[in-house]
Image (cartoon, rainbow, N blue to C red; front, side, top):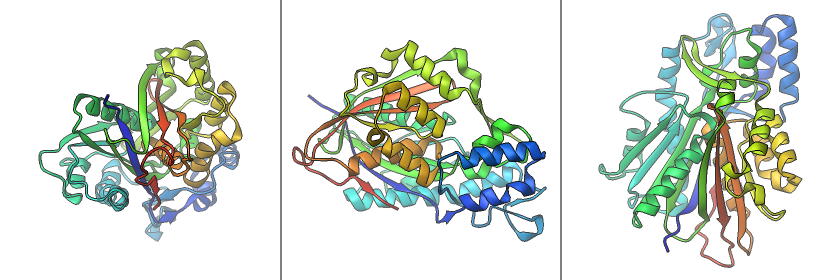
Length: 367
């Protein structure tokens, strides 16, 4: 019987690591003082050590040439100019890393791109098709503006493609430039998101070939009662994130009421592996408590949050790549969860194939 597999994952982040510089900049543009102190405290407790951006000089005095000049942040149009220039470059780095791992991508039949941080047309899918020298007839799908859970939506779509066509080979690229959407505002919920988000990309190959990670099932669930607690809107000064502080608690409550909505998560064993979207420390804490997970089970997600921050749709793929890199001799069951506007919970059950039981075509290719 045909079984879809996530064969390989490669990741990439920009060259510029600017988390400390961001924290140092806060007193120059966050007002009033009480809000500044709250934001600084939240940032200190974020469990993030590093975040990357495509912007070499993100913040500074207006005359310094920084993208975000204090008191003169750019328009949405200016931000989209940078997205159009930098998104193909970063996505190409992830695709090149994947190519180095699996060889030629000429057998790719489908291309799925997820992104919620920029728009242009002809778009990122066309740029990637050209860069990877894919056939013009490759079937392209762009999953836009779904937020942090979109990679698992793309993985679900890829799994269904392979189930419907045994010869299908799906290339999925998740690209986000979250650092392009910093805003001067006094709204604390928006400022909190700026302490978390960063830039990153992942490229993955999904097919019926038995290597890497067998995709057992994918699910989507929706808590309409909490739909407005997370939002992502296009405004004149970039895209604006609304992030209710109660989101971690609401996710936990929803999962307690609807355990069946996320596949086999509620029946997981202590030996299972997990890739939980690192939306923030509080989300990881809430899910660890809800499922009773060990520190070892949380390590991939916490490590991604520490080293890269929240890269929206690309982030959970970094955690899945870590699980592939750490595959042992035996098969191991696993679970992935991601969350976003809606309030949406996207999940996947999988089996990481043991290196002693199947050929290993590599796992993660690091940037």
